[in-house]
Image (cartoon, rainbow, N blue to C red; front, side, top):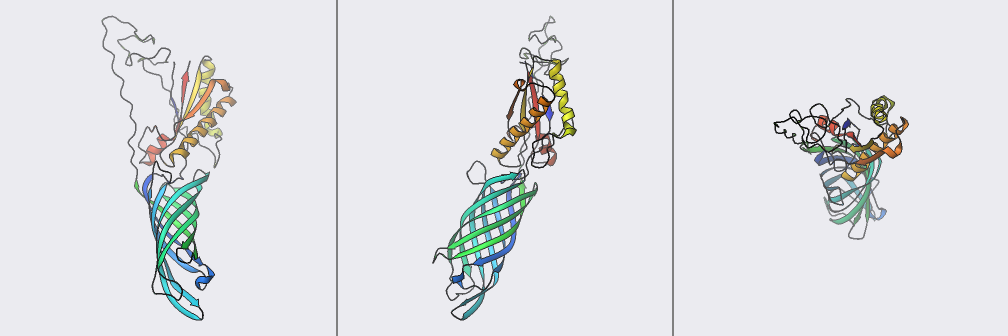
Length: 339
């Protein structure tokens, strides 16, 4: 089988819980709306902070611990008014539910907590509670996200409800440092006493740097697999779109031209992403963008039955995902030609 690798860099999502970092700290500010029978006067201002660990290979995407502080808590029950403050400690499991775009999505949470009141109020005491909630997350950069969240905390005693609504600012810590995958250097062919071509690739043994090339592979003058690299390709897509920009479609035409010059060839388009985002989401994203390049090739006259696509997601990096430059190299689509 003949193979020609063409590197085409493709944009990937910033949004996901399994992000480019291992830990996340999120300061929050918002309010608390308490059930009427608790006797609290109006909504209370609430501030807090959360510390989360991103999880991999599990059903849930994050485990987080949090503290919420409510100041100037005023309770009036049966004509008696008392003031104080509440500190609530929480432990939650977080799950990404739905991705609206590459960097904007919906998540859910479920957890337990403990409410510590500054003094014994008329009808309210310290105690545990369970909670559940929903949130919207917008990944602004690789290490910064905005989060809007609503949680319903249900006290174990009397099943009273406190509804939290908060705005959070997620800050990523401890960036992942994935070592790049480096291909082994091809072995040098041993010198032969007679100039032969043992692998029948058209390059004699005494200059063939890649012996035992599979039959039919296109090679260069050194006998190694011929590689065409399209620089600055990018294969950028419009916001929330998988349509290839006309700026880069012209570069993809080079692939179509090669197909026209070699009508016996078929092309395989393989999509790749960096490690930012959930592995499952990146897998789908790599497939969709490989399909987008395929559609562009069809527009240049390449028959659909000569094109196949697949995606590797984040599984085959060629550079360090711990750096911005390395992640840019990993966001790519590779085209391989087979006879």
